Length: 76
Image 1 (cartoon, rainbow, N blue to C red):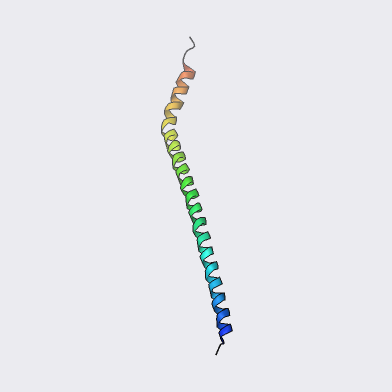
Image 2: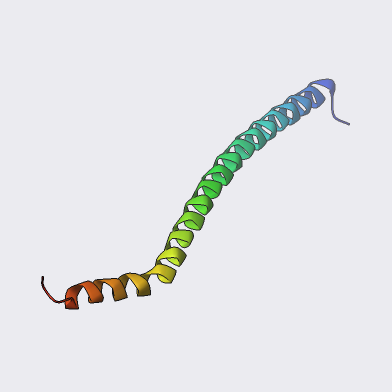
């Protein structure tokens, strides 16, 4: 059977491992939080860009037609 000193050493090692695990989990939670924040920011940017592209896609034919009309107008 393990003596008292060996049990104390094991308990100390387990406590240290538990402390490291808790620190690692805290670090992971904060890192994942920052990653989620950056992803949300990028998603918002992409949504804005997609909206601008959709708007441009909708408006471009009319803009082009207006430019051509201006270009072929008789000079006054």
